[in-house]
Image 1 (cartoon, rainbow, N blue to C red):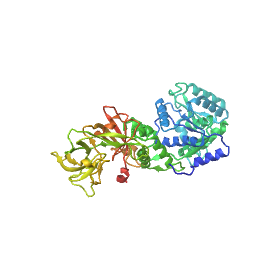
Image 2: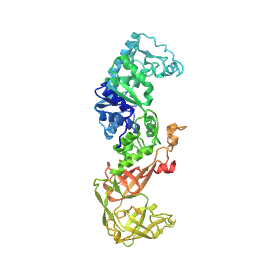
Image 3: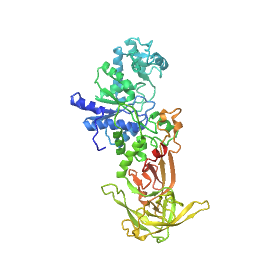
Image 4: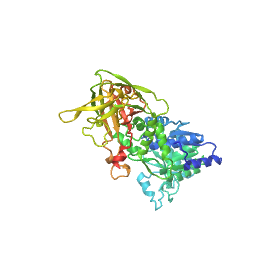
Length: 553
């Protein structure tokens, strides 16, 4: 956005901290768990963390929060790195929480030695029951009074693999009467006999997020640890660990996560859609993942602009998907090449144009940009494909397209007049016969005829065929997470429409996978990764207008 905007509350904090000399260098981090692909909600956090250090100097670390070996994969690490780079950001250090497993273990031992942690043989159900309720204090575990020596021995044996999964945990000895339930002796280590994607079988105990997060920030001297609002209640524990361990005092700040209409943001639910083949994969163009948006044709600039427009707030809200679509339209209007494609074809025969002749016309790739976007050659002949919806046998009022006796301009070409049409046995129009005005050629028109309608077309002799995939919202309701029942009950059965044989101008035979195109009068499209030279496949990124809001509100 070009206009000046006021500082958000995190920027105000940072400016005060830097101006007061509290910190010399701003250091942030983006800490995804490698248990799925990043989505548009993560894009907001990425733009915030990296954007702050771009604005104020300093740097951002990429730290993978890999403390759960059961759900994490190198595939996810690779995809998350690719997404961040694609968005236009570069981290200073690539780090992993697993880099700190030895240090975190030592921190846990330090807490035991201080009498601030103990090994608990209670089951998960027993621990939950002993924690009490938000209005009633918890009850001490029967193992809370174990001696330091006994706890050190048991924790060493946990690390050595002597106990099975779930047999015991290490808990912080915090405050069982705290009004903050998270402070009631949280579990800080659990046993998981599972190979880790980086450390293999070296460890069978793994730190919990709450124990690893703040300490990892401290090790990296993160000055501003920025999280979403669900971690507000965790901040007290974050500070407690840092204080008790006497380490660098990183501090946590929280902002509202991105909630987007007509989709879900839970990686667990997105994984469910993938595993149950509801979508073709994490990068299905209907998914809110960054890789799905990229495949659909969204650009890094449009996503960064979207994140800028929604801003940083302290209160949860639901952002309209139409705003994201507005941002991509704004971007592609300036950058996409204009081309012609006919998605629902009907044949037009120009009776007075020489049969078998091909004329090369010139079209501008993007007349809406100041810089020269170039031109392309467009073959024209006596037989064309046009859109079926551009002809009406009995025209309605203010119909400015083709009808018996009506005239329209063919984009980049001539004015034609509809003389007659042909129907099949079922009464469907199969062919339209027209005559053209030779003096009406675009750019050289001396006919003196003015027409109100312009339609697109493709020469039948030169046309290439393509598969077109048109996408709609993945869900039929604005907030599927908030509705009763299973969120999948609200899946949109019409979220993808496949047009097996559309006709495109020959220029698109050499379409670039990284390019974006405006199919004139139809919308914005890009080449799909399924595409081959023999079978071209295009995805619709977004329509030219927000048809959904008009028809579904």
